[in-house]
Image (cartoon, rainbow, N blue to C red; front, top):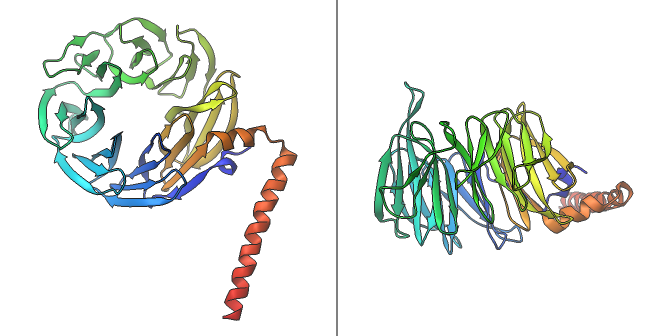
Length: 363
């Protein structure tokens, strides 16, 4: 079965998609490279679109307020209508954003083209009205921002590396990493926070090393059981909570990965591998150590999943969403069962086309 045939919803943003978010009510939010934000409800109906300042780098949703990192700005939009409540300019590009204790914490960074590196970063805390509570500037770039239970943690690049505990205001407690390598990725599980380093080390918030991979950690996804660490060359390894390996997959570099819902009692792991101008999207049943299905799409830059829905955003503007129940039903169908369903859809489409032609000729 091709993933294209199992989509629950396919929509177009009208520009390359950079960020996707699916909330608890199955509403889908998509942000684009030119700053457009669109929203569809749980039935797939278009609710609103709004133009913001610049490329959407991240979303954070709480209650009726959707926060978007838009170029140099943090923008607050009403979830139900898309109406902009406020916009605050940061120093440098807005990289990530998270809700924390009713406030908004954002990370910004300044990139120097001549040095080919980030020269300054900052962590900001704003109220839900957009008022600044504090800002802390630093030489290191926070590559990942994770919120879990009583912890809000940033993973740092050079020179300090390690993690910063952002629960309270500055100065922030700093924890050294297991090795002197930048922290490049992170993931949140039900019980812990995990971080990946440029030398392949994966460690927990307490500093304990879980595993050492074959190269720099590009993506780190915590599953219902265990985690998946993927290097910059596309080597993905699924591991148990204690770090013991249970499966691996090699291939082209991975642009995005996620966990979304479950199939036959196990988490489904989604991985987008770049292939030329397109992306091969794979869904893996981690308990079966095998690929459930796959499909080729335009370059995938963003994905997000919940217990019931999974969505991706593509360079050609496509926003594709899968439903857990529908995908499970399609996976369980035999080819002979799937063909009549496809024939029925084709017949219905042909009937509509004939009716349109007849109406046109009568006019």
